[in-house]
Length: 128
Image (cartoon, rainbow, N blue to C red; front, side, top):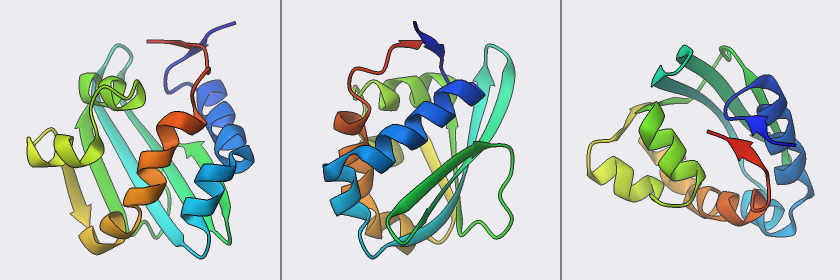
């Protein structure tokens, strides 16, 4: 059964899959990060969610995260393209479709983790 993109159920399944995927776990080993995501112009309005990485464990949830090191801002269309693997984060940034506020170096350190998200989420039935 499909889960609605960016819904609480979707975020929960993303968290579970990232924590269970060997490739993603390898990419985040030894990393720590607190990231805020802002998605603008979605069908239900703007959406905020967060991602935290600590000790190889990933947390994902809706709303705001205190102490976020960086905030990633993108349109709903960009978020969908990135989630489907049709647009890489680095390309979105270079095209001005992804804006980063805060610690850019932290985001750069996580490029391997971001790249491994698409295979980790493969097979997740999502309604966009």
